[in-house]
Length: 366
Image 1 (cartoon, rainbow, N blue to C red):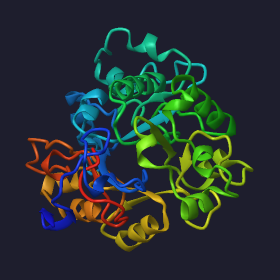
Image 2 (tube, rainbow, N blue to C red):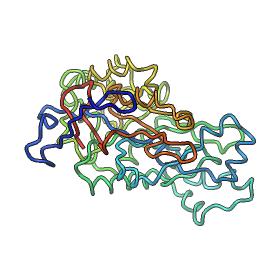
Image 3 (cartoon, one colour):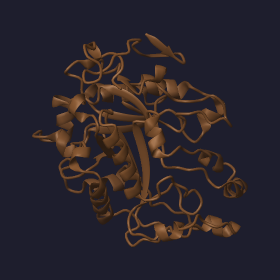
Image 4 (tube, rainbow, N blue to C red):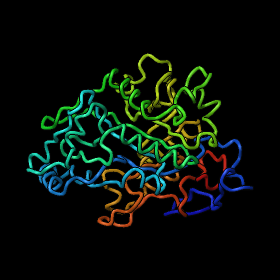
């Protein structure tokens, strides 16, 4: 077994897939499904560094909270080129446009915004940002822009394993912030419509695709299973990472998720269950493995809030990579030189490998 930072989690075999390397081995078994993989991606994938002057002001105002915001990512295409196969996008509802066009942070410091920023943000449609007014810098500032980038890269690399794109519906506001619009049923309908305006049916694996003729989505993934990996290459799986009221609003009165473009993080006994977000691999270890064995797709996190990177603490990372979760999210596919060597990757340049908990194949799948 290959050992990575103390965690044995991958076979030493490095095998290709049949359409890539002829006469490959068991890693190309015909029964391999899209949930038989493990791969790594990024958290808040759009996020750019806060302006240094604004970050210094935040450190004075909220010194305990600000360090958790001190991370950033390369542009989406660079992440994908580097092997990211999970992407996370925060979306804010802005149907009329202009709600986030004039962030308060720069104004308070007398700082100018980039040329054309306010005009561009005045266009109607969902905006992409982490926290309005202060942590708003994004490599793609509208949802349509982000999706177009992902689609363009995918079309240029049609053999990639399915990319998981998770969405957070951002509507929280502090009193001193620009007040975000609440996500209601109409907002979620608009979100689905905007996604479908960019991504074609051929780009997506939807809940209806997976459910097929099964009575519920849960029954489909726990009995017949997810689609095969080979025809799933070059596609996206979209998921709403929300619970409670937001999840209920998105699901509506559907039995599962009929007609919806995104999966949801639903408990394993729900008719809509197909995907779980179980973010703490240290405390959720047994839960993750059990869910994966049942047939669910799982996303977990290797780190959060810059804590592990600052301490070079690899315990959560190693647990995540060994857990069986198909998608492991991180803020550090590349190290932050300010903090040290901490990074999250599969070994030997592997982008996606066979999942040891699923045990349907061995070695490399991308």
